[in-house]
Amino acid sequence: MKTRLLAFLFPSATDSWLAILRVGLGLQVVLYSLSLRYDWNYLFSGTGRRLAEALLSLESHFIPRLEWPINVGAHVGLHETTVLWVAWTCLLLAGCGLVIGLACRLSAVLAWFLHLCAAKSGGFVSYGMDNFMTIGLFYLMLSPLPDRCSVDWRLRDFRPKSPQLLGFWRRVLQLHLCIIYFFSGLTKCLGSGWWNGSSVWRSLIRPPFNVIDPEILVRWKDLFPVAGIFICLLEIGYPFFIWQRNTRKFWLIGICAMHFGIGLSMGMYLFASVMIVLNVAAFGAALIPLARHRISCPPQEVVP
Amino acid sequence: MAWLALHLLLIISFSCRDTLRVIAEGPTIFPVPFGNFSRKAQRIISIVLGRELPPFNPVREVGGAYVHAAGIDVGYGYFAPNVPGGYKLVFELHYSNGRTEYELPSVNSAAAGLRIAGLLDSIGRTPYDPIREILVKTLAQSVWRQHPDVKSVRAIVGSVRLPSIREFEQGQRESYEFLYAYDFSLQNDAPKRQDYQREYQH
Image 1 (cartoon, one colour):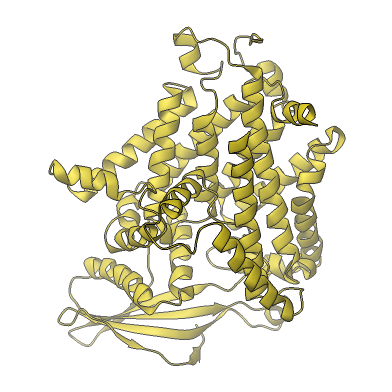
Image 2 (cartoon, rainbow over the protein chains, first blue to last red):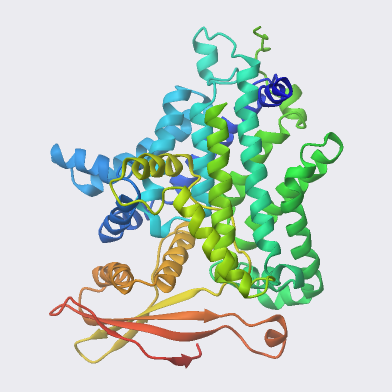
């Protein structure tokens, strides 16, 4: 039993999934930073931030927040807006570092810390996407970086990572995704709206997700119950069908298509992209021909 | 191994707690009495997770920091069990010459717009009036900065009622139900809240 459990938790894996996670999350951090470049100070400064941080302190004083660098900046005479600008720049640079794989570990830690600070200090303006970015960056930061596709690997003489350790961190991400989709599907199944399609309709016409004109949407009304049930089944079935070799491809494509559709039809591009990155890194690395053949990475040696 | 077991246990516990909260708050496909059971079960999980411990308790402090750092402090019931209606905030700008203008909270990108929608949901849903007041005031201050010649600002918070497919086909569109109004002026920073039920159509 213990042997089987260990074999499950520590499977041998290459670092293709880690390369996908690093590049994907790096792009995500870059897009996140760029999308908020004009509103960064507005969203994360002033009374709103202080209120969110005060409420955060009721939970724990050790949760990273923008107040920390702002207080440090105040000691050296830097204004809040200057510190926020520096934080934004560092986050963007960390994202770029992750994309090319330069100073991977430092970039991952910096991206996780600064994004977490922004997500927690902007508690009232945060949403699900921030949560998934935190999850992804947390695992990336702890994973055995750098991967062989990174600049770090080419510049310095890194020893290949243990395939079991790589497999373990991929397994943690896989298990976490299974729990996420199971509970997401379960809570949706509890409401009648997802069975009769009204939740699909409401989510598509609810401001600010009303990207498509409702006059166009209403022509497709007969598809809403089918879409609602399909989403419920796709999510609740994820932990059962994603592991089977013969259903994995279908489930992964289905989930990614669902997120792609959400991104396109509701304008939640960043939410869609982070979910697709997490899914493809966790379960898609072996399925993508690009990851198997075309990425010009040096071959990985297996370390006993 | 021990870390993974604890980590997964925390993820499942927070997910269960949020699922039970969804059932307790309803409406769900479960009968109403099930809500009471869910409320009790949710409370038990919260106690086990240390969420009921007093502030500054070391277990609460360390545990809270870990779950937030790992992004596992909440469940994953997005848009579940049903999709709620949103909230709308309108600023009524009063100028000294008697002119009145209306303005919505505005940002520079669609990505920030999603965040403002989340903020409006927080304003509408929070049961704590002082928090709502501070958040509305923060947004009002930014409007004031854009219109420095404004004499007073009235912030009107309303809930959005979405039409069903059938209602939409019959010509109904989204409507707004008045919830709260706050008056801000430069002389008197403390807002006066008006709180009455009135339905209005935009």
